[in-house]
Length: 131
Image (cartoon, rainbow, N blue to C red; front, side):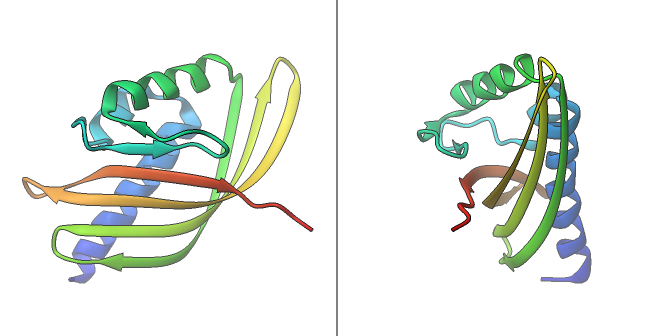
């Protein structure tokens, strides 16, 4: 792993969150691997397998959201030549119909390098429950 590889991975992870925040499905289309093996688990949700189901879930989230703000804190990055993952905390502020919700999640984003480009192949968010 070179510094350039790590910088590229961090940049694609950041691009994912900015596209999520701005509700840009066209950008998510470029970031996500669109194969049947991609998986996504939204906090409290079921496993979505394959780009069609994942894309549909983002469309629903975006349709039902007036505003999003997402801050992230990277906890760990593990990276090989073709597979990498980033573990992070997501702080999501969502506004819908004038109602503001804030949520903390622990997330894992998995990436695979194909044709010299990193693609998101897995996103799993789990709510952080305070005791």
